[in-house]
Image (tube, rainbow, N blue to C red; front, side, top):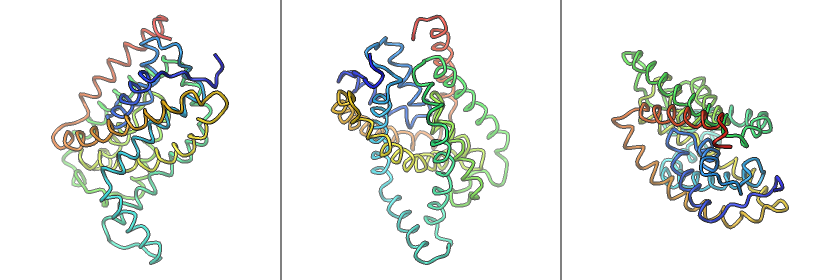
Length: 292
C-alpha cells in the first residue's frame, strides 16, 4: 500500500472519531489511542504512518477544537475582547480576562516552536504501537507523580490560586508540559493539568486552563495539516474525515462537560491507573508481535 493512502472505512472513522473526541480531553492521550486501537484490532488497511492518516487525525482534532470553542464561547469572547482592548490601549491592566488571555498566549509559544522543530522526528513514531504504548505507561506515571507532589505541597499558600494569579513563567511551563503531547501516548490535557497543579492551581482551574490552552493549538495544527487531505490518493479519506470530525466534536463537547464537573471533587489517579495498565499490556503485546 502506498504511504500516502489511508483507506479508513466509515465504521473505522466513526470509532476513531468517538475515541479521539473523548481521549483528547480525558488525560489518556488521543494520539496514542489512535495509533494503538488500529493495531489492537488489526486494522491492517490503515497505514498509520501515511500523511493522509495524520491529516485525518488532525480533522478529528479540529472537531474537538470547535467543541471547546462552543463550550467556552462566553469565556473566549471575553478573553479575545480583553486582549484586543489591551493591544489597542498599548498597556496591560488588572482585568482578569486580559490576564488569562495573555497567559494563554505565552503558554502556546513552546508547542508552536517545538511542533515545527520536532514534527518530522516525532512523526516516525506514529507507525509503531510499541513507542505509543511505552509513552502511555509513562503518561500514567506522570499523573501519579503530579498528584503525589500536589498533595505534598497542598498546605502551600499558593495552592488553589486562580489562573490570572499565575506568573508568565508558570504559564510558559504549562505550555512546555503541553508540548510533550507531541509524543504519541503522552496526554496533552494530562501533562498540562499536572503542570497547572504544580504551579498552584486546583483541579478545576488546572483543567480549565488546560482546555483553554489546547484550543488555539489544536485549531492551528488542524489548519496547517488539512491540505494533506488533498494530496494524490488522500481523497479516499476526505468524506470519512468530515464525518469523523463532526462525531469527534460531539464526543468532545460531552467530555468537557463531564470533566469540568468531575474535577470539582476528583483527581487524576483513576486515569493514571488506566494509562499505566493499558500501556504496559500494549507494550508487551507489541514486543511479542501480537500487535503491529
